[in-house]
Image 1 (cartoon, rainbow, N blue to C red):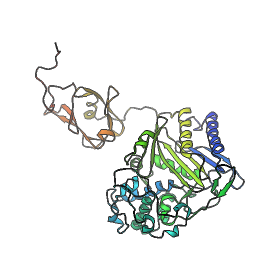
Image 2: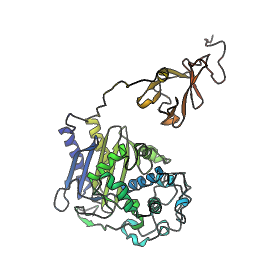
Image 3: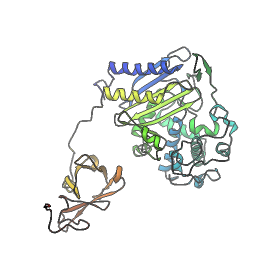
Image 4: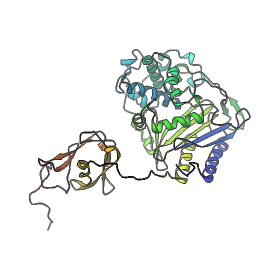
Length: 461
């Protein structure tokens, strides 16, 4: 919420339009549309140039390319959440005879399976999918180029396999499953495998002249789960809200958070660029903020969805040209414009409705050896443990309901935090994955591994 009316200020709206206008003009895009989402709804839409002689709006379809992969990942994670598969399963367990069965489902989602980036020639984005009727035609004679799990290597055939997995376990075509399980529940009625009017035509813009050439809009066939979809800024804005908050009809908030966590080892250049990949989502650190989403391209079209969960801002950018503008940069700039011009107003602080005294007595200062930490109670019975110097390992922990907590992030993710009590019920120390936290540095009365020198602290002459 940025103002009492939940609207962006005029200066912010003009800055957004200016960024879009510069991108369309300098990138020489026949048309370009964008939307910004905040507080769960679209708060700004912009468009430049025309589609069929009219200024395009949030209802005009553009091809979104590899943003399709995020939709496919959602379908796979639904199968996991239903217990029909495990991300550690090898593909062969559920889809025997694929030709790439040694890859795990998690590796396929995160592009770490070692599969080739593209299918064999001809260029699949500009040729009919009917040329590749079987998975073997998509994978070719040498599907694996790298050892599985060792490096991030973007793979379009990998997502073709995931689409085939969905079809096998659901017993229905990928697009039919997608419509029933994702598009309809989220109200994305302008997202489809084939274009539906009004929609943009894809163009190639000559690099040395201001002339254009129409691009073919091929049905990708088996490759559809990697890049087939058409959508609008309106639908993708709603999809961005889902990727931020989850929707129990599709995926829980916990599972969409899992999608946003890096799942692939980054290349050296990726580390320098602040880029990573989760489960069907691209992740980047830009302008001092963490952004997630996905870009897409097919001949004639460019697309991007960018989301900053911390700022509660998302942007969608679509263009109908093969090259020119950089939608990922535009999306990041639109998010930054809103986040910096109108910072998110935090929710009011309120005391907890009740406090568990056995937990409250744990609050305050603790020491791991000579490192000082502060333990604070958070909402929903959780706690946080943060280094008081501002440097060191900190984390949030969720309550397990039995007087213990489990780490949610960083070094302590999944680790158990438990208070160790003396016979009289008082707290001796905290045990965190075998690390002993005491109320004083190396407290003599606590069970510190290795013991505490009986002569205590001293100076050195």
